[in-house]
Image (cartoon, rainbow, N blue to C red; front, side, top):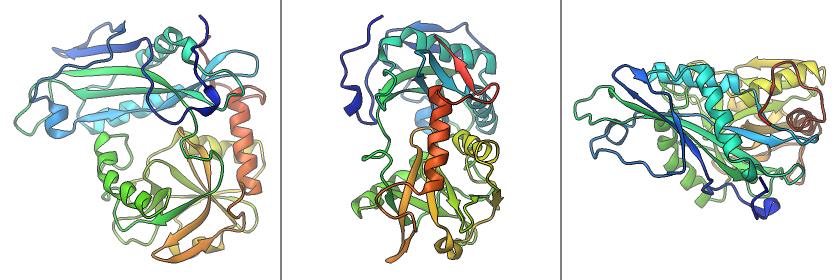
Length: 343
């Protein structure tokens, strides 16, 4: 295959229809064998469970072209297991982990000419998702489901790439204590839409959510986990009192990179809003953005500025970013099992 005629260095984080996607149906208590199809349209009953009661879950990962020309994905086994956890919480039949990995391979291979070239700054975003399909009018789980995977080439999640952003402390809550904040359910993101639109109108890139119970502790943003660097140059990772932070694969990888590659002390603990002004650096981490540095936090007009400033990543955040992306792109040796070669 030859690469598509796309300006790889200037594409945004948006949807581009590609050639093939994967579809599998769950009916009568089992998943069918699944197919690759060119049809990007979905036909549903007007009473489908996903439309009536938002019964849907999803994952997000990327395929990259490495320095030596291979097409790879990063730790997809963790996406597979997290999707199982999400399905169980939403009373949906888990899609088998080995089939999840197989579906990712099939879709990426079928769309190889959409995988951006090495060095372009772009990647192939992979979106597996599942939803309740049959008609459901009473409040209960659906009986039939569809699992799908599509891919789309994307550029940086935040405009300006790795330039520091300004975020605000949100007046809204992301997730209730002991609710669905720790899984990738579509309803979590629907709840955040008004908050993010409001933040953008006010000139901020993202919201920082506090714990819903006490509004004292830092949790995460609408689309990413949070990391800090303290005055001693060590990594601080917020924990949640109510288990409402999504277990980000990128965050877990950053923790390992910090410990193993950079020799940093990592402190995973509860972090209060009152103490973040003492940190030197702050970043948002997730599949889409990898790490986006934060230059300022606006707390209802009070600006909390980090020593790293608004011009570039702080030194520790940059080392973390460079090491993690170096592992993903193939010019730093990866821990065993982190890189899944597709082509």
